[in-house]
Image (cartoon, rainbow over all chains, first blue to last red; front, side, top):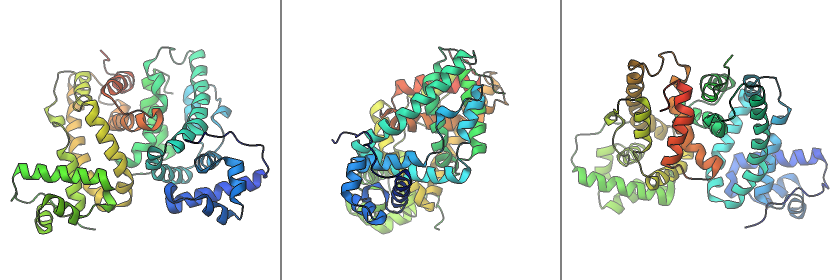
Length: 199
Length: 199
């Protein structure tokens, strides 16, 4: 299995990288992960495959960096002074339209993530673990403010609750996840499970 | 869109139906929903396509009936006297091995459910809605016993919590859902969110 590479010293501008990432997301939507080739990315963006490989190391990393680039502001920037405020800010980073696109993209990728260990590792190292680490800081501050107990059993499942809400909205209700739904879920489930103030 | 048919007066024995369902689940694992054909089911089970269509109406219904047949005992049979007991009984209906197979099968089907309105409707009418109705009775009894308040906001999200736990275990932790995990999740998240006794 190829090693997940760290980002190389950039030889391309941020604007050019943004163009490349947008093209990768378009291709993902059009053909899916398995059929997406570095040749197609090179052709669509008029770049050389050598540049793509030098910059990103390979397809799994390029795809995950593109997904991460598409995400709005970092969790680390959120600090409203209450856990409820922080979680609500988190749930409203993306508008409903962006959230639905993101949901469709992740649904399309879920099988590929399961089948490809390299993609799974890139996901974990470049997307899930960094977000989790930042998210831990949000929870840590809530503990320090006395909003939740350090030994609340639900603490280890906060990400499962939030991601679970996002995923099951489509699965169970056949509806796209919306800000309204997520805010309601946070107040009805996440905060009470943690024993945190719900208003 | 074809209408989801009710089961026709059976011309085949329950044993024969069980054989057919097992063959359908095998084919689903081997080729996935899109590539599964009624011809292949007929060939593998040495039955006529006419029989399959007469009995089940079509591929979406046959597939969902096969999935439902593979599920262990009904939620309706569970009544332990406490909500915690009922939810624990629900989470241990399947052993870890069956749960992992089921998880893999559902992962393979998630894209097909999204792409095929007929399959989505069969899922909803034949699998999700009947289970939800039975599940509501479990919750209703807990309200009548005074374990949860009738107006607990988490009540409308109990299924999201449980299915979300099941789905995110693979997605976030890269681990199969196990009975141990689900029991821990019920005690840490579901019961506290509902304000129900956790022991």
